[in-house]
Image 1: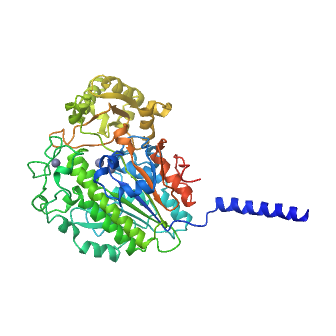
Image 2: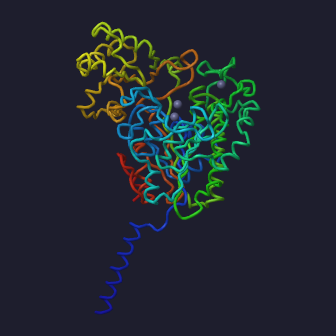
Image 3: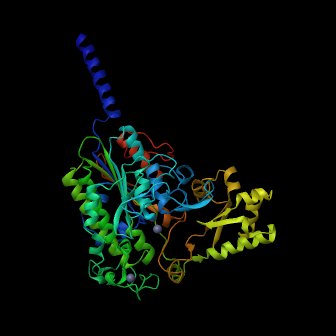
Length: 548
Ligand code: ZN
Ligand code: ZN
Ligand code: ZN
């Protein structure tokens, strides 16, 4: 009997300690690497699959966990909001990064999402350095890591684009570094530091932009292999400034002028970003001790090349083939330095991109171009004829009309009536217009319809417009060059919202799911994987297959 009782006591103790082990994991990854590929559509990995190596994207996809049905759950699908939403686990309605540029009602001015006139550049004395995360209104997963670890984690953001480096690193990041195309240097701001660390200065001294711009850009593989793309000389591609045709080889030394900026719009901008990320890992000894560090890397060249040449250009395909090799380098470096299984990676994108609307039209598909000037003039005409002044309109930005609230108030006019008047007037006058919403509607209605719901989640009263336009699928603002070249993004449609999401490394099983996942689910999933706080404005949910 006694033996039986003892046996049961042992069982109880054993199961209690097992339960404890489940809720209190003993190990943590040494380093988390968040990779954002700017403008990467979810279909690119399979589209380019035959041309990719085994150590880059495919390694992540095959050995990691793919969330194949991951979408943005708000509009506008731009870079600033995208990076902020990945890292805060919420949408612009809460984190406040409603666009790249918006009219700020508090400051009564158009502002840029990362600009901060109160700080100075470090390594730069021009506008490019006056940047910080001060406009971010809720915490990031990287902030939560710092809060949990009493600031002992190292958090670094790196991207050609200031916003791609700054927003992921959060307000408490140790550093963000971005590229200054005027000088060819990687820079930061006094928000983070007063002087660049030696490893960044050393990196700048190696003059990589000169190196990359000193020879023509040619395809990695023989050009006839690029069967996944349109012919090189396509009317839907925008030639570089100074180029007669958008074709290989692109003569970078002749095209660069005196600036260093062109490197952004070549795949070498990504290679340089990867090399700076490797330098950061060694220079900052990321992942060297038991306290988890976080490196946020955003590859922006894919977006610049995408805007320039479109989603179906050989130029874009070659950019992904080269990025695949850069990612393979990064994985190899992490394996050798941090050790396989000691680091956790997630890879996603800040938005997708539309197939060039003119190419859709030429294939008999419905698409089109809207002209912001015509739209703004239509509303000005309405305001002039109905209210006696077109100046009630403050600006037209991000498909939103901002009304001059002070002027409307002083004229004792009803703002909701004016918003509705504009909406009713333009609804049937503008080609390609799918829907028009007003902030008065939005503040009193909870939308379930998917596209209206995405608009609602992207709005923040002090930063968003009064009247919001939604164009039909396949429609964009006039594009670049002749107005019909390249591509863009920003809509609530799958081509802009559907992005890759792959998890790899520490604690991640191999697998895949087609379950619907929102971009806002990444941050809370990280909170559970790392056992740290959930970002304070989080509206996402944990991906249960990964974090139980
Ligand atoms: Zn972007
Ligand atoms: Zn081309
Ligand atoms: Zn873009």
